[in-house]
Length: 148
Image 1 (cartoon, rainbow, N blue to C red):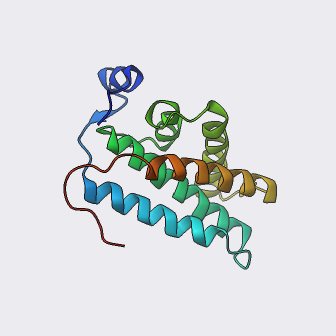
Image 2: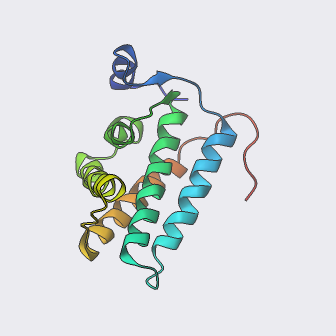
């Protein structure tokens, strides 16, 4: 495993992240789940809100896999996305799309107001693909993994 980014160490020190080693099985499961969801998000026959939900959860699964690979856990979805520059070296514009999607998801989930359009969906899918590309390229952790 690569050296742990100082930003993740600092977030753990102040209690924003929990130190907890990820496992090969867990990370493989998150990547597989995310890939299936992202594939389904591309199905134009589904409702926009369904596709959005699938793409959002795919991006979260990939982002969480990266955080777990580095040996951390967070119960805060926003922080999982915000950590992407440190876990996968992704530029801020990628996590900003995911932050906007998180805001839309929360409004839909907690207030019943879904305010997304095709453009945001496409931006979300593009961001999820970028996270997938980096996350699946992380070196495999030792131990068994889920069989495809």
